[in-house]
Image 1 (tube, rainbow, N blue to C red):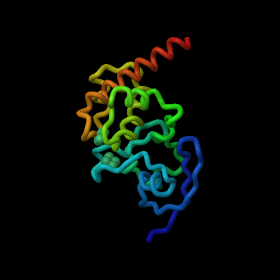
Image 2: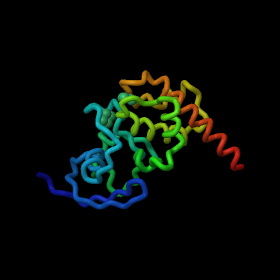
Image 3: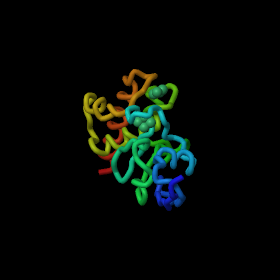
Length: 164
Ligand code: FES
Ligand code: FES
């Protein structure tokens, strides 16, 4: 067993410190050490994106990051975007437009979509499809996911305009 290292992570605004082997993957630290089980594992080849979180301002697949690399980082997962009493506008729209079925891809999909709309607040359908190309879904056929994201974007833009 390799020597454990002391890891500090800020997840969804909360500081965490724990010991981890350097080879441990961020997804397992989140799920098994911190009990943040929204991000999922759907593959072993970095394709599916079910494990997507935001790390230091970028969408990353947390199955492809060692916890050692994440030391000192700020991480946001779907749990940090909203909660059942106050859903994030994307969560609301996924619900409204049936952007999920089994829900397994959804935490990664919504976390990616939140970052995508920060990067590009007014995307075209094509840009949304390309922007979530790193996130696979076996249930929806994507159509309603795209609808949900486009609808969330227009609501967010309308709210921004109203606030100006
Ligand atoms: S678990 Fe599939 S990309 Fe991370
Ligand atoms: S809703 Fe089932 S994998 Fe996307």
